[in-house]
Image 1: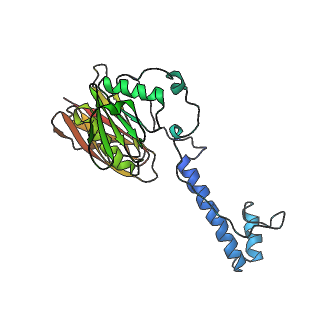
Image 2 (image 1 turned 90 degrees about the vertical axis):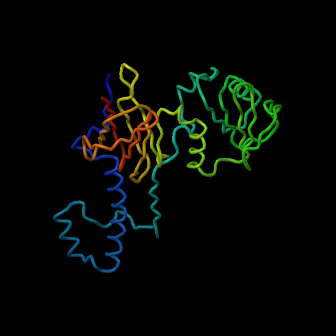
Image 3 (image 1 turned 120 degrees about the vertical axis):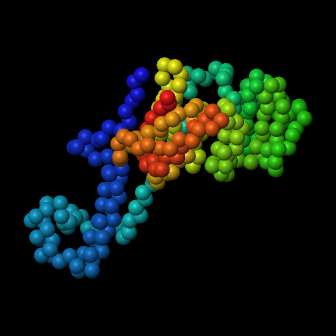
Amino acid sequence: MKIPHLFADPHATFCSRRDFLQRTGSGAGLLGLATLLGDSGLLGSSAHAAAGAINPLAPKESHFPAKAKSVIWLFMNGGPSQVDTWDYKPELMKRDGQELKGFDIVIVFAKPDAETVERIKNLATGGATVVAVDAHGKYSWQSSQPVQLNEHTTSYSVGNGKVLELAAPVSDPETFAQDIRRLLGKRNALLSLWNGLTTIAVPYKDRGARMTLLELVNYAGDPLRLQVQVKGSFTMIRYETPEHGCCESLEPVRHDGFTEFVIPEIRIAGRVHLESQ
């Protein structure tokens, strides 16, 4: 089984993306500092001349008189994911019009049209749970007896499944993710992450369909401490990172068919090796 290696160091000629952003961000601040020192008379002409003789990149007079009175520097960490943009999605186009099969839970954020309503009803009839977010209006699945779960959630039984209507949009993504995790149930979850809303986890299995590797990517700007639960019984957990290499041993806790462990820190990416006797 060939596993892609995500931690190759950048070529010596180039800097990493994080180094580039750090240098350019700090560089903008240093330009402002040089201007303030110059306006205060702390950078004399002799200092400029000496610096220019030593360093050709030292500050010089501009070709044209400066017109800007002030500059607003915006350093924007992250951005919208490709799922939330109009980027071309080949896989989505490939699956357009296909029936959704094999899903335990389907979440619908857009207001459903007549065709989507029928698909939702068919999914629920087959045993799936469909969550309709910010659902307002009259739909065919509402013919069954409604069950008010809480102030904002109403449940309708449809065939072997159900439709959950949320009367309000998602205001807290972390709480919403926890609610969906509870709907999935522990038995149906291959792995679960706590404090991992900005973390993507990809499991790899061996030929015997047993999980042996877990790739983690953190797209937040700050390091995270993660609690991980994976299905199966593992006696040894080893953690690899680009910063510290391989490997740090983590303490596994096994119970009820699952193994839990804590990753002390993930910055950009990490790799977990799962081993059992």
